[in-house]
Length: 235
Ligand SMILES: [Zn+2]
Image 1: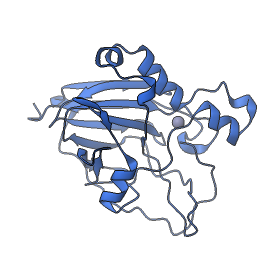
Image 2 (image 1 turned 45 degrees about the horizontal axis):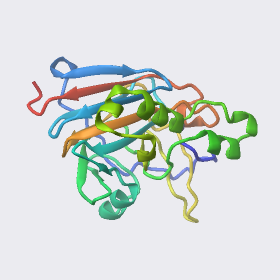
Image 3 (image 1 turned 45 degrees about the vertical axis):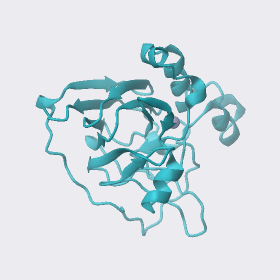
Image 4 (image 1 turned 60 degrees about the vertical axis):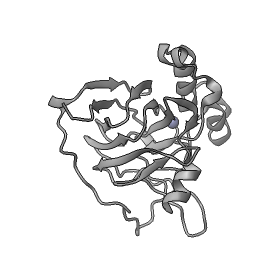
């Protein structure tokens, strides 16, 4: 996340209902921990369910989805906002691609709101927003680049740094004020809250478990996340 912090409005309300998942870890296909501040990349096949758990709370998870069978088709915040008529993601939200197709649907959510607008933090934006001395600090863009330059899966399928595009900030709350200003209101997620998507096509998922320390999007304390995948038959 990348927006300056200002005071939260008293009238803030979540826009989506909360719903727990019936799935349990005992039937999961795989479960992994992504360490604080680190990137992750993996496949989620059509029909599979993918859960991101905010293990310790208040952790932004910058995420890009690609169509595994056509890497030029990837998550589009513009298509998602326009087609859903909604700025925030929550239970039932469909995540649209740059071709206007549905990549995934949010099938369970215990947080209530996820951001479409804030983008990913970067060395350059840290420098502009905070100070020149912040340039060397770890950022989500660095994580995306590291994954795409060094992970075997990226080389295997041919994803490159130039493929970085719009991302979702799961567990981040960035409401838009009446005057159009983006508002960085944190504190909606907590330890153990999770969001779950069902893949509507074969997906490549690229995550930066946000390392930002210059604003409160991670509570000034980046923490690990858990990534759990279930097969379509949940077995
Ligand atoms: Zn970040």
